[in-house]
Length: 483
Ligand code: 5AD
Ligand code: SF4
Image 1 (spheres, rainbow, N blue to C red):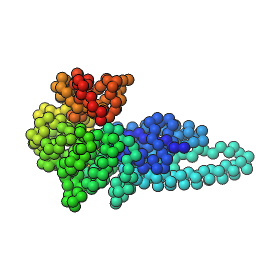
Image 2 (cartoon, helix red, strand yellow; image 1 turned 60 degrees about the horizontal axis):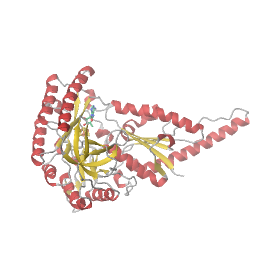
Image 3 (cartoon, rainbow, N blue to C red; image 1 turned 90 degrees about the vertical axis):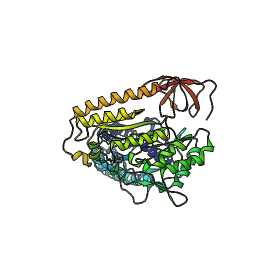
Image 4 (cartoon, rainbow, N blue to C red; image 1 turned 180 degrees about the horizontal axis):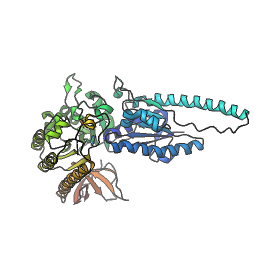
């Protein structure tokens, strides 16, 4: 009988991608994915370490799984608990100590070794059972109660950074049906060492997959039904992969080639990429926004702060004015491009004037949407050791002020869409019965309420209402068209 695999994913889209690939790796071992945790034989908690809150969630989630495991063991079954991702990478030993019932801890570079780790765990379990059996027999002989303690976690740990890339070892075929949106990791890791960030430590050095591997995987995703492809990487625009011609390609070139090769497969095939760094926004990539028909008019380009002093302390390697220049060039190339960003408030040393510079930059750019966070000192990063840490009260106050401004901007951006028609790809069920959620070219969520629609449809929608976080729309005339 197929074993059931439940995966709980935290954090970024790279983790979503990794979760799908872990399911692919385990499928040949008889594990089928389930969406209901209750009947899982194995759970993988794919974790995020970026901020302290994200990391702490893992331990509370593990508390629930400990109970499930004990209950299963009481019924003579077991639930294999695996912790994957960046918390596993960074805090493998701590997980071992704080949650000894965890069976497997697998770092973000070791997923391809999951079958081997599972086999090792099974061998340990068998040996443990045998030992428990021998002890029980001995105890029975002595007339004592023969109720052995349940076998709890075995703690197989793999958080090595291998010399070879995990991409060379992951299975080729895409087993997990991607739905209409396919995620494709083209780059991993980061060498930028922003002083607040754990990514360079948890994901390792920058690595770009060769263009041919990317093209082949894009083809498989499209074969499996994807009509929107999202190229992923922690520093995706730092991608510099070897082309089939032996020459190093930039991301701009890759997008052009991908679109040229696959545009005939679907009239509305879409491309996106995330997450980008301002330092890597070269002219070829900016030109791709002008020239590549399927590339969506959208860019997530984190800036973190609008103050040059803070940007310097963060080791970002660019100034506010460099960012503004990039925005200018992008808008010249693609006037309707929507920009989103990430911000941190309360980075060590941030003064009121520094924060005002951030508000000024936000006003100057006008973002379609943005994520903003309070600075969270992460152990092992230079930022956590800097003097002049900003108090929580001040960081919170600034965060609220920034979020109010950003909300205003996203509400204005969405309101400006009311009455307009746009192509929407229907992606998933909405929150309420009968609702479906789609995406506009500008990455807005579009709520649709139409019984004739199904996931995977591309439709032209007239926007009827615009809020800070979503649009509402209805089908524009007889425009319906199956994907
Ligand atoms: N504290 C707060 N926010 C952080 N981010 C990354 N590290 C930290 C940290 N230590 C934010 C950045 C990044 C996003 C993914 O998370 O804004 O762009
Ligand atoms: Fe982290 Fe900076 Fe690298 Fe982005 S560029 S992953 S924020 S170190």
